[in-house]
Picture 1 (tube, each protein chain N blue to C red):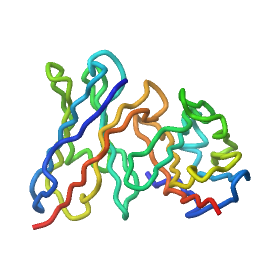
Picture 2 (cartoon, rainbow over the protein chains, first blue to last red):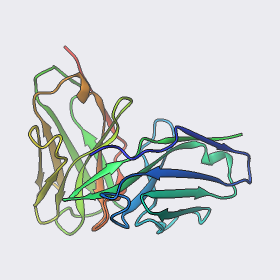
Picture 3 (cartoon, rainbow over the protein chains, first blue to last red):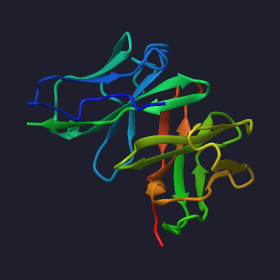
Length: 110
Length: 119
């Protein structure tokens, strides 16, 4: 299993939107609607933002949204805020009771 | 609200066995969900290691299956990871996690514990 591919970095000004891609294959992202996204601040554990491509856990602002097209999933952060500056990771079910994480994207709020 | 807390040695010698325990509070691990381990290192990024279902069935990352064992003690509401024959590449922050019932997502994480493999 290879890690899902994410851009190393992304940035935006406060109030703007930023979209992060997560590219896999037809065996993971493309095969299942089981993509999730995590936010990780420095020296903290990851926090679940999105599961099953588009679902937000209770307490996650609706500024965070997920989507998928083919073998690529996307996380969009709308109305960017200073506290959104963090690392973001995707993950996907990959069949046979296994899964894989993405390489991570560092989001900078300009 | 479920809480997870890792414990174990922070330093392990090469070729020895890494052993970690996760104490769970606020939810019974024998009631539902998967319970497991994810690690993070600068080189490997985030890596799923193994989970144990509330029924006791276990699942492993194929790349670690030969060295990893996950087990549980329901009387103490905790689960453990043993990773044999460790090398420097096993140096990482190890998180215990709760996995949702479907879809490979982790909705609760421990704070993480750094394990360094060095002589």
